[in-house]
Image (tube, rainbow over all chains, first blue to last red; front, side, top):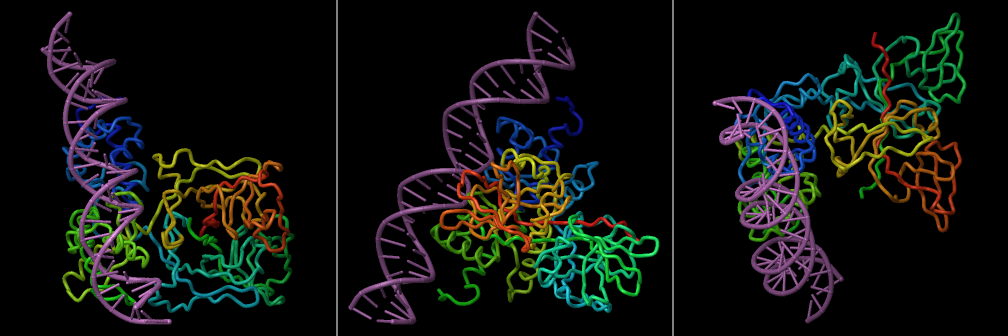
Length: 243
Length: 243
DNA sequence: AATATACACGAACAATTGTTCTGTGTCAAG
DNA sequence: CTTGACACAGAACAATTGTTCGTGTATATT
């Protein structure tokens, strides 16, 4: 183990990182034994020893004899970006950190038999009750989040897109698409909405189902389809009763 | 003391106020005895009793057997203006920044041809880089988040569960399941892992594919399957290159 | 070589803290 | 009047958790 009088050792950093992750995650701080397990230290006294040092240097503070009372006073620097955010978020108790969460308006249901209810473009305040909350880290890096909207799938008609009744799909409005993108399209001749991979070939358009065992649809006339948007994400929740 | 009514009693309010002030002030939540002292209740059991009610109504959440693990989920309304500010501030901070976003360790890949890599010990330190961040609002109300783990699906073999290559499934370890729950099972005779709806019938077990067009599997001998966990959520990301 | 210092383990201990169980009184519905 | 839900106290219990102390081992300093 590196010996350093100045600054923080590797152990100190690991503790700080663990504290940040744990507190950010759980909402309360870990016990000494939990810290020990996390950083691979066998004795509680040694953890206490390090914690005292961190307290000395004012990276953390804690109340004597009170369990789980560790607070982070200042963040350490980290090369890991996501971790860095957590460190900061945990350190300053106030404000922000909310941009980690993105709320996407749930603007209706999507059925095979009807066009997509694209959200009214005027887009003012929407009821957060009917929103889907997503961690920004799950979205493509520079997705324009304020354009996104969510739809709940109704019916079994999109199983060839591997999408089930009750699933939530998150999409971005679009009138055209690039090859290989998953799009929601309205097929005017069939009168239905469907989700397919989009491919423009020489003189036709191929719509490929997500399910690899199923066959594509070919369209010679681009009038026959209208692209409604690009699919960004699909979420399926299983509400198993607990325990 | 006021009888049972729809909303919260005076005691509930007092507890919520005390929690808000204490947490905002100290940075960690009070113990049951501290709460008892504050609201003039002599027995710890009665405090526990009220806390359970508040948990039931989802004003707070806490982890069993873990000290000082109370989190405020939503603020109450207060006639006291100054207090009201604090209540909101605390609730927003705690619930939005800390409680709303949970990080679930991504502990490997799931393939049809091999058993599930269930995470090693229940709580090791995990690299936040390899985690999936989920808004708590997307999870069942009381899901024990620290038990959850995520797996990335490899291969097309689970399309009958409406799960595609690259999808992320979030699950909770379990050895047994209730009827209607989506579980991950290891079929020893077929030597494969699969996702199915679980149904125990009189003298056999029925495993129903999520895809309603496909037929179930029946198992007379319970030795033939091993339940590895319950599926909580499935996430599919389409990384369309933007623009 | 002697010594100080930082790092490490483990066990024992005591305090804190959550849980459970028994009992009591009140009040409203039947 | 009986019953049962609800509100409460108190005590005993068990688990969690912080603290302390004795011991050992490197490494560096003098």
